[in-house]
Image 1 (cartoon, one colour):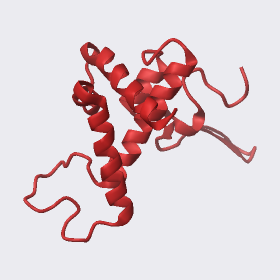
Image 2 (cartoon, helix red, strand yellow):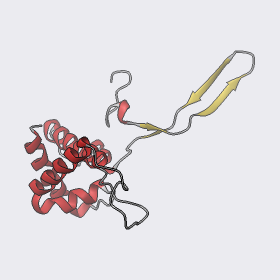
Image 3 (tube, one colour):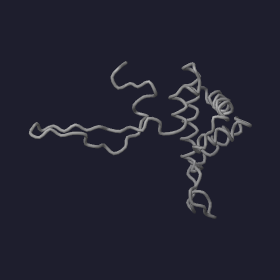
Image 4 (spheres, helix red, strand yellow):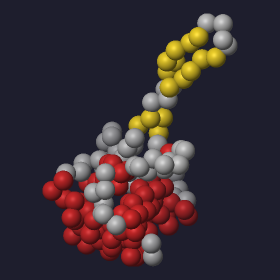
Length: 150
């Protein structure tokens, strides 16, 4: 195994918690630090890392790319679920930017393309995944991957 690579995804996808000092040697001038990494920051990453998105690398990679694109698109469009309810328009009173409008349109088209699988994929993106919906999630991510040309 190469230095820096992991069996469950590239290191740059990992998120790191606060570094903690493990031990110090008095007089040596060196301290060792141990970084605790969150191996699977999202449910999508966990499914990919454990091989549940598919057994062949091409299929699982394209499903991961489709899911990550959906996450980025939804976040940029301001469509992520709100924790606190409000009666105002999404994003407040500010005008919608061209980028935000494009992301909303692209996300809506992807939801339409997924058909009946859309609810299951949105549940995955909202971290409300259940093993019972895995086949629908894979089907929805395949449709988005086909649409995006992955």
